[in-house]
Length: 463
Ligand SMILES: [Zn+2]
Image (cartoon, rainbow, N blue to C red; front, side, top):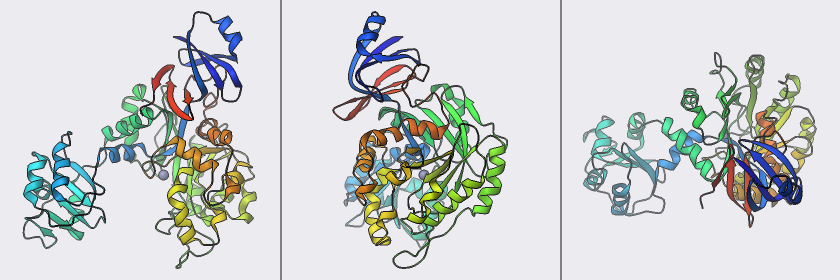
């Protein structure tokens, strides 16, 4: 189908137009010119037209699994929880959590609500669970077990592992649910950063032509040998191998130069020498590298390592998170062929954590403006760690909670969700509005993403 979209075109200006046929952009120009040239094209007018929106760091399998779980946050009465379970429509195990009971529950309530399905619900503190008879029996638990109150269906501490062992692992349907959730939010591209088990790739490959987003895939280290890098059709690209240089800020395992308040400097996870050795092999096999680095020491170590590594043409090395950076390490950013994949939306939760754990070093956290002086930025959400909320991401990037001087302008922040992400993927024809580029687009009205064009097809964003 031939479509002409008119409005403010990102990178061009107001009263421009984008003309596309099928899934490729054919022409971009002043609205008047295109109207004269394509009088029979279907016409649409929107406020702002951008390249397709990408989430450059996500875990769609776990995001999908999370979406399926019953959210019981705020509930204190077992009868309310049981009512939610009874109303939950899907077959199979019913899983969820977030409640905190103010009285002892009764297993019979949950047996009835489960209607034959095993039910396993974790308490908000994660140290206890409410389970029905079907779940307790599946886990091999019995009334004699010391960590189980059989009549209540209450399971604590060590018996929880028995339930975990038999509860279903995230599977193919969770991956699809997660990817569709991105599509309905208006995203056209998602980068899956390998918390996913290696077999998850085959779930995407099995129906690659039906993927609801263009998917960039990284495999976990140690599991890429024998896999062919590159496109599977036009929607799935197997592009990288993921390494972890350190842990995270929450548990104080991000690897720092100086100690956290309360002690400890965090810890390396994959030692840098191992990342280098396996990374060189992966690069020789045609995979780029995506290396998780959050603490200052991990970030400096990975950037120094990148200086020594070769690059694949047009396929930059990726540093994931790059969350804490010292002034004296900023010059390590000055190198070609690297993209910084960051998650501004984490600032909403992490700002307080940074103040508490790293007092006096707030200026080292989430340095968007500093990094952008040297490297292209690619923005993501790390879903399910945070919801992939584009507007929240842009807000956090443009109004930095810890260091206003590290804020980006709106255009630069949007660029990181479009062209920057495409550069991180190594997709030359993506994330830009130009003749020959993919016709994956985002439409904005009143500062909100209201529709997307994916593979040439217009779809509304669900409110
Ligand atoms: Zn992640």
